[in-house]
Image 1: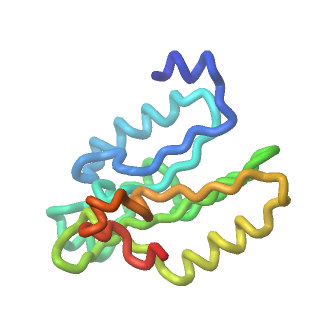
Image 2: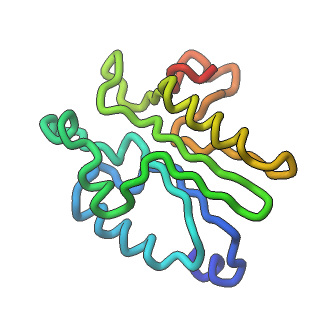
Length: 151
C-alpha cells in the first residue's frame, strides 16, 4: 500500500479510525510509525477501538491520551484542498448506552461545526464528511442504529 501511495501521491489520505485494537501505547507507537511513512497529507479521526476498553479509569478520565500523544491533538480536523473540503468528526464515545461500544454519536455542537466548515467552502468545492461510524446503513442493517443523532 505504501509503495502504491508513493506512486499515486493523492492530494489527501483519509483514515477513519481503529488504528489500534485496544488503544495500548505499543499499538499507537506502531500506528505512529506507519503514519510517518505516508507520502502525503492525511486527515484522521479516531474509531471506537482507539479508546481504552479495559482500563476504565483511562477510558473515562483520559480517553484520548494515547491518541493525542501519538497521532494528533485535533479530534475535529478540517482540510481545505484546491477543489475540496474535508471535515472530520469524532463519533467514538467513551460511554455508550446498552454497553455497546461499537455505536457512535455526533453531538449538536459537532454538527454545527461541520455545517459551518462545509458552508464556508466555495460552491465549486466537493464537500466531504469523515466519521468512523456510518451514518446510514442498508435497510437490513438499520436495526443497529450505529450512530446517535445521525439525522
